[in-house]
Amino acid sequence: MLERIKFMKVNRHKRFEYSPRYYDERKERLERIKAKYAEADESVKTAATYRERLRQSIEDNWGKEGSKAVQSRSANLRLIIILVLLLAGAYFLLDAVELFNGEVTNLDDL
Image (cartoon, rainbow, N blue to C red):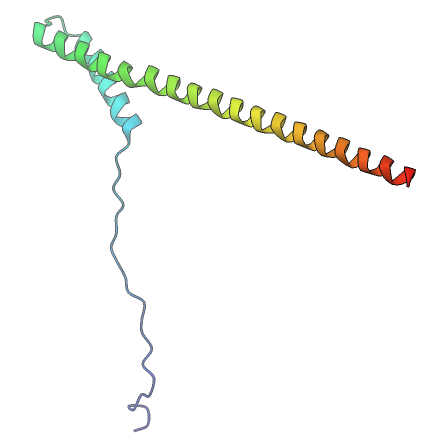
């Protein structure tokens, strides 16, 4: 009888059936390239497929150069900022050492 009376209820873990889905841009690009070369083997090429392949090629290459340029520009800017901060810090540190050195020599005269 005491077994049926439960003062504390223990919760069981919940199970979820989660299957992650994601978009793999690299895989999609490789599939498009494979399809492009599979089409190239066909003897009959229409103007529409040529235009589509050209459009896709331009679209693929459009983002490559821009992203490299932006990354390079941001890296160069970061490097310049770090160098300026280091030079400013060294200047103020050497100025403080010179000030401290001047005060120490003044104490010797007293």
